[in-house]
Image (cartoon, rainbow, N blue to C red; front, side, top):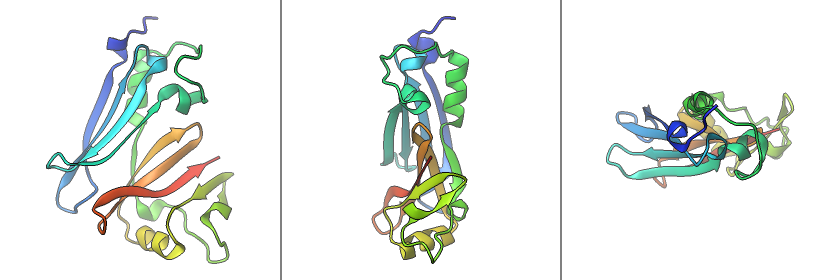
Length: 166
């Protein structure tokens, strides 16, 4: 199987309602690297004006198997990388986030199907965002670990809403 950088360069761009109810933002997921197994996955979210809302990246190998890109691994095919780019980001509604029960002091104490959660928000702020049923963008950031982003109209920026890991 040939694993060249040209074959492994993949990109998916889509429009999403994120920062404004009537205007679509642009969400891009791009994979590039010397081989597919060493690819860096970059997520970029921009307003229709081109202004940057969020950008982050992770090495595919780190998310897939907690390995550094230069560690020996099985080859990754261009087809596998295309599927990865296609499914790297999940767009959901904040109402799909787990509820923060009143009897739990910290979201970090919540366990659902062995998953653990965390948020930088207070309980009131978290539940307010959750109740707004706003768009959120969820991405992996490590093996069995990810976070979801929301748009904060007060700061006019994207921010982490909550994190989930096992």
